[in-house]
Structure formats: structure tokens, C-alpha cells
Length: 546
Image (cartoon, rainbow, N blue to C red; front, side, top):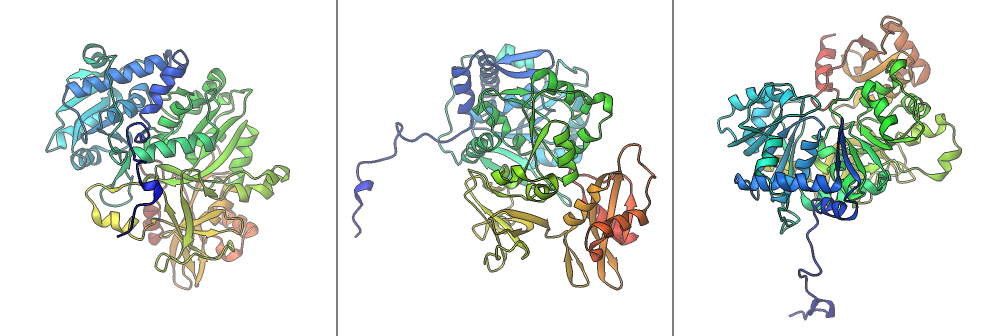
């Protein structure tokens, strides 16, 4: 029998030397260290960290008095306003699970989520109560608690609840409520549903440990500190705001709420509030670039912008830099709490001009601090591809910041995590310097005459065209080549009709290998999911009919 080593005797884990990791504790610390610092700005409202913490404790105690406890799901349908931010602390304080609902979903999908997640309580902001009312009417097991959120900035809208949020805080909340951290950091913290392209969305389960670590990693990687002012251009429902709901508080920065992404609001807010950080999908950057000139208010500070999704084309990077923004490219997915890799800036890039560094900046990069390991490998053999920047494999991740799994879906969980790695479904190459570059989703690669064509590579060229605002490329059937690229493009405002399909194709042939150029071009708006991702499955269906 093996005897215990010297470090296994009398050196036990106990209350004094082990505390479960949870982002809930960030708020208590911020309220203790900076009680009078502005924590939240929303219109004319200002909450200090002391007030923020008091409101959260009122919220948590009111939910507890109504019977909400460990493992209960609390769903919130709301724009980026204080109530949703407060829910990120109040709900997990009780050991309950926060389900932040996508505000762009339709009633049947919301009804499915409420049923599948077994929601015990629903909070819904009045402007969204039309769709919530329909969803509640379609549920077989209606949640027992329904609360209206009446936003003083825009209070109009129907009521579906038995009371409203502010009344509940005032009349039912205890400002001295004592809460504790979860007994197990593996406990469920949040339930986020993937937007999906076909079928019902999958419920991704986060735990306290992963949220804590990813929030800390984000704050460190993005340079958020106690002087930072973070503008909520990213939906808080999306991966819990990429965990910045907790990261900004951990750094004791200031949250600036924003109900809707509108350049006419964003530019003045950057100037008036001294915004230093913001995040968003590439479409947000595109909206800012193409905003009317009279909306582009000047500001003195440089603003750090983190973007995810498809790599920002070099033309987008150049235009954002010209307007006073520094763009950082990150990569992630719902299954890994949002950002997990970052295109970390290297000192020698400083001396490069944009044409040299843009391709480097557009890579997905290296693992963030909390991500244990990333690799590009054959998904069957798990053998790493060479670091040659050419051999394509599957991007795989391993980390404490990977989801617990999919709720009530063991088969999908096994498919995603069964190899001991998170299979991202993204095809990538590994460069010599250890930076990953995604070439395409596995389902989006175009195979033309036996040659692999990356849709992202074609899109990069299209984005450089001065008149094109958005582009998406998919495979179209071809009798000779099997399939060829088909481009769907949206022209910049006021530039509609300035070029035709032949001119776009010719432009691509001049700027890339001719065989990779699209053979068809379709003009018009692009279909998007509820999280703003382009629905390429819709475009593939359209391409088959051309």
C-alpha cells in the first residue's frame, strides 16, 4: 500500500485556505474598496458601487423570499440596462442559474427555452413584453414568478408581470441581505442558448469557476482597470457579455449601459463619458465606420475595441484606427464563455505599415491567460498539424473555461467534449509563431476542382472594395468544378448600384488567385441569426437555386 507523501499529511483543504471561485465576490470587493465610485451609468441614472451592491442584495433577497434557490433557473429578457447587469450578481448569489435571453428571439423560441430550462422566474423589460407575453402563453408550465422591468429611460410597453422590478426591490428587498459563495465552484451559474441555424437551440451550462477565470482573463488581456469606462455595445445576453459583466466589476471600472447599438448614441457617449473600452461583433465596427458624418462626434481619447466572430478585414482595421479606435481581435464561442484566444500584439508590429500587420492582426492568435491549451489537429487521430500556416485541421480547446456541457443533451455534449478537447468545428492552420488562424467553419469550406477555398479569404478581399459594406461567401453547385464561390454582398449606404456582379468578380480576380474568385455575386441585405451572425445555411440554400 502506497504511503501518503509528506505533502499529503496534515495539509488539508479547509475554510481558511480554500474558497470556491465565483464572480459574485467581485461586487462585494468593489463596493468595499470604491463605495463612492460610479459603477453604473444609464441615461441620467448614476449608481455608485455601494448602491449597486445594495440593489443586488435587495434583488437577491426578494427572489429568495419568493422561493428561488439553488439550481432554479431565472430567465431575464432585457436590453443592456442596470436590471440585467444586476441579475448577473443577484441570481448566482442564491445558487440559482441566470438565463439571459436573446432579445432578438421570436416567441416560440423563447417558449422553448423557458420550458427546456425549466424557468422558475421570468423578468422581462416592457418594450419586449409583446414577445414575452406570446411566449408565456405558449408555455405548458408557466413560470410561477413574472416581473416587469420598467426602464425609466424608455418606460413604455405592455405589462405581463404581477409587479415591477423597482417596486420589488423597494418593497420586498433587504439591503443588508447576507449571501455566501456557492459551496462548489462547479455549480451551474448561467444557462446560455446557442443561436443555432437549424432545429432547437442548445443550452450551454456555465459554472462559477469558469466565469470567474474568464472574467479575470478578459480584464487582464483587454487592459481593463479601475479607471476604465466600458460601453455596453455588446449584448449582455451574449455569453453573459463575454463575461465582461463580471470583468469590469472585478477591475472596479464603470459600466455604461446602452439599450441599442446606434452610432448616433455611441459617438456622443464615447465623448461625454470618456469611454475607454467596448466590444462588439464586426457588424458594430461596420456600423460605426459607415455612420453619417454628422453622427461621428470627435473624442480625444483612444478607445480599445475588442471584436470577435470573423476576422476584421484590413480595410475595417484601417478605418477604425483613423477614427480613434484600437482594434483587438479575439476568438471564442458560447461553449467557452466567449473570448478564449487573442491576437496578442507583438512589439515588432509597431514598425509595420497596415498592409503588413493587418494579416497578422486578423489571426485568432494565442490562448488567453485562462485558456489552458489550444491546438490544431486532425479531429479523428488528434495528431497536431505542422506549424506551416497551410495545413488545415480542427481548432480544439481545453480549459477550465469550457462549458460543463449541453443541458439535457448528452449526445451533443459527448460530440463536443468526448475526445477530452472541445471540438470547436472551426477549421484552422497553426503558424510557425504559434498563432492560430481560422480558415473556415468545417461546413463552410468550398472545394472547387479538388482545391480548398476559404470563404473567409474571399470575404477579406470583398471587404477591401470601397463600396462594399458586408460580404458572405458560400459554395454554389457547379457542373464542371463541383462547387465554386458565390458572394452575397451588401453595398455601403448610398453606393447601391455603383458596381455590377462582373465588376465585383473582376476586382476579386485582381486581388487574389483567380480560381478563388466568386463566379456569382448577389446584392442585397444578408440574413442574420438573433445574435447577428450571418446565416450561411440560408445563403447556401439560395446559391443552389441560382
